[in-house]
Length: 282
Image (spheres, rainbow, N blue to C red):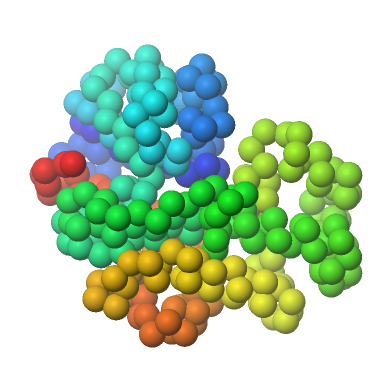
């Protein structure tokens, strides 16, 4: 029996696999070693998963996560999981999860649009090239966090439509001071910002919101996708924002003469298939 986990900054998806069949799937909060200590990660895993998960005789745990880009961060995550499952752990980035889930053993350009954003050229075995995501302050173009950040900036400065701004404050039950507190003083501001992107989905018929979204997505293609050999390889997307705004995403791709064949909400189905193929793992 194997356990496969794929985690963004907001949500972690866990899948128990036996003889290449899905036995149980569970969702918990996101895990990210950039924002959480080893102890906090261990506590989140222990409290989030059913007790039955820790009693299973697991052959291997494969964990793919946001923030798992360096050996230091992988070791933080790995140590937390070993303490809970007492079994071999393999920790890789969420970007490799996207690449394996979308392409298995084929070459292509894998893109993530969720709370954050990222992209890579995957040669069928390893990530051969990666344009640095740079996080929601310095990068993450196209992501939910950046879309939320731009809207909040406009709302606070009186540049967003008043009716949408008022609806936002009413639905989130917060005011301008609460916004500042959530962004600058509370944990996981990127999660807070990303939730706003789903609020905006109800206002796509508004010119301001549509322009905000399309410019954000256009920036992702310009600053990330176009830095690869994008005319000669398939481009596929995964992530909650990509899935939510799939039609608009395809429209923007057409501006760059790109046809998007695959847009998945999560890479888990592809990861299950990948790990059932006995592909040599990098």
